[in-house]
Length: 299
Image (cartoon, rainbow, N blue to C red; front, side):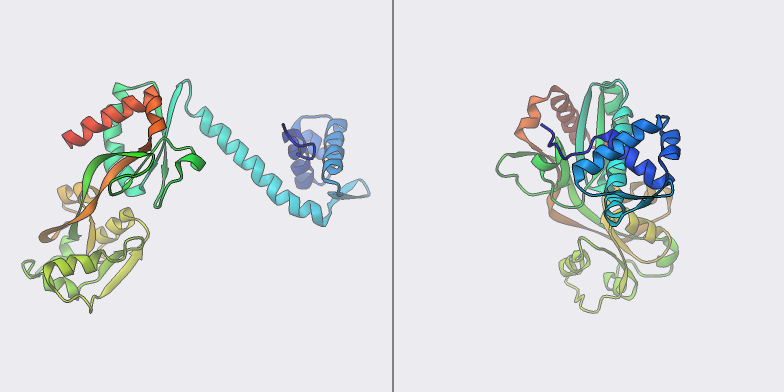
């Protein structure tokens, strides 16, 4: 039950329109309502809040201090409502919607190319994919599943392994021109692009090669692997990125391997989901499709 002091959407819209227009008459015209309707909504809102939101000065509305503060939140609430409405309408007549949280580069480079096949097989299911770099609270955020790097699941979560976390050192052909790629120590003389959320990757790379990496020449730092890839294509330095993130660039000659060696890390990319998600037939079908896709490996 809505508390008595909570404003209605109509009251919020009337208030924000009055803030924007500075008069009840102009606000009513912008909302295609009568002046009396807007005046009544504004009076009810002020009564609920217990503070005047405007000072009436010669038929003009001058915001009070409380009104100016409330306007910021009121406008944000209406904007979020509009965004939620449009987002929901975008699903059209599809009855089944799955909410997924996915690492952004994995979503763009691994998942999205494969979703064409899923859309053909399951035209009645829509995916609502949100980018996440960190942990996901399935209960609070309402996600059906998340694709993250993860070890064995625990508690209420189950996991499907999609692909290993295998990293390649890549750079633009121009940056590596004339260098002896058999000598991995030469990479220490080049700018090494950094991934902000996984800052130890280059240390692990050189540690595995038995090379002292204390004198790494640091390069630019980016938040996402997709940004690191673009930096490497532009010639900013050498990138250490997942193999799936540079398939197109390697095939197209925009990037080349800076070393024949790869770095395999222990936590694979997994689909994590609470057991309750299996009770949804749409999710069960998506999980079955994703399992087949992971085994096949191709886009």
